Image (cartoon, rainbow, N blue to C red; front, side):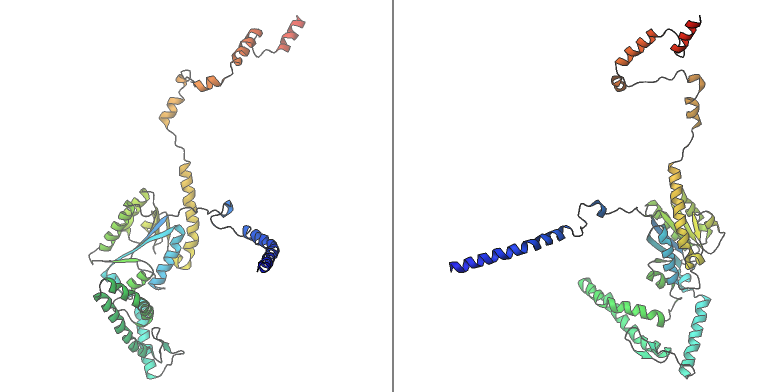
Length: 382
């Protein structure tokens, strides 16, 4: 038994001797591995990025989005262009009921064309290139009208889900929301292309989908303008934004725009009027065409650069005070200026300097500008 243990010990020693070089290699590889974020290498230290300005978008929906694109696309492109000025924290839109019920002429024409096309498909004069697909259940149909009739089933299912969530409370309500969230989102995405909005053309839903907080006000005159101005002033009072983007052409917002500039906030106006009052009193202005084509996003970079240069010049600005200059540079008070030497400076002076000065004065018989060589030459001539 002892011989067996001895053989095992010898075998273990041999194995460890053979593994020592590999352990050294592994140790070297581990020490030379890529350091983590907690390493002491200064090159890997996190670089603090400069703080970006907080931007708020305030949209007066009386100035409606362009007709060439959908409200959702217009809102997303607007947000993309505004991100060059800083971090977009607030996106607010105000309008009355008439603005949301309004249907643009272009949308009316599209609906008429769709209705005529459905009639031709039902009579068999026109056949679609690809069948119509239901994006909820995946079924296919030969005509758009059959798809619309089929989609009513999904509308009923959606309404049942909403009723269950409304009637539930507490924990059960949370469970139902988590259970139906995927189905409800799938229905919303599919219904945009199939279901025709009962009121308007889906302006509020498109803006909400783009991330805007949409607020409906009463139909009284100037109710939306008053509510939007109050919201902007409230934001400025609480210092929640450093840059205000106003989407409007209404001159009633001139007062709040000037107030924002007096508070040293950056102002940007988006509208269709090229020579409007708001654009003349704003720090920067863009048209809807520039927003949609991407030109505004490129120009915003240069605008931000000009703002930074202006801030630097304000910090370096020197102002001349005439009263202070007249008092300090008055010719009658020049001789009355006293120069005070502190005690530390007197202590720091070398005491041997006074002795050297006295000896120099004793030795020199003439003025300080008369050199010794000049004196010698004058004596020899005489």
